[in-house]
Image 1: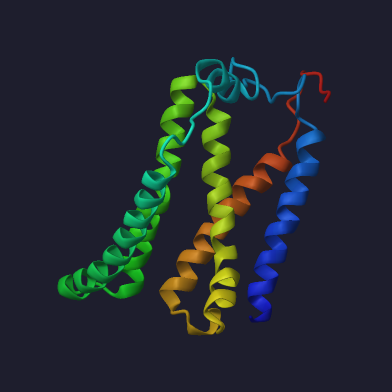
Image 2: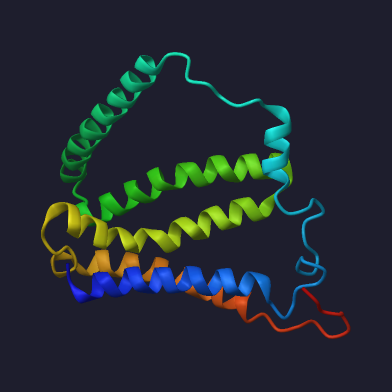
Length: 190
């Protein structure tokens, strides 16, 4: 592990604590919701889901395990075939890998976003997207621990650019949410 990897993880934890603290005390909150908030109350997606289902029970745990094994095998095959595909089309591994990583990691956000829109709970989609973007740089530390060697010194300029861009965009959004100025003429309160 290198100090920057540890710093990234500490910044992430600090950000979580600050957002959690700010959630209860934002100067622009009105009756528990920001101005022009969604019409449905907070947590509506969870309540609608609970009302509509009784829960999923794994009736065949062996089938679930086999499905997980097939998924693992598919991941290994995807990694090897993507390396050959990147070299075949003449794209650098970092650009191809970042593009594929972005596409694959966006799938849960797409699913969550579509479900949130269907349920009328846009906060769920926004929090999922920005939560994922804020967490991805922390994976540098995880990869270093798992691989046993520091990852950051081996990064290329493209890797640093892509990680920095994601961090910058997430920071701008979070800063805007936390330090949003109060709207004149509206009473504030938590």
